[in-house]
Length: 147
Image (cartoon, rainbow, N blue to C red; front, side, top):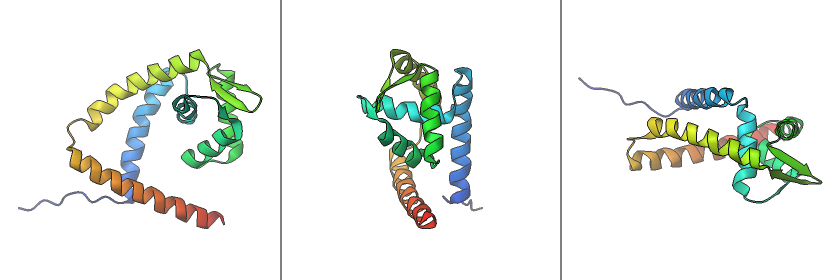
């Protein structure tokens, strides 16, 4: 009897993405935040310094594949929650924002460790290479469609 190993394709990628996103969104729901807010806040936190507003908008657009107006709206939502401040053209994480990010990251990190744990390093490296290539090609296709 032979078994067929799963093949990485668009469907497999989509299923993995939506499963992982659903896990993260369940954590975020408990903290009163959205996926878009977490991704945007992360960009500010990991920068380690204030981020120029329009640079952040461009990063959110690139990460989430949303329109600039939606990215600006998410930044405004984070400001309304007190997780970031917008001073002139700079966006800064607040102490509350850093605390929020730390708590959510710790909680989702525990779940992520269970999901990713035990996968051989060589498999993770191969998957990483494939996903980087798929992302690069999809971004190029999206740019061509938008041109």
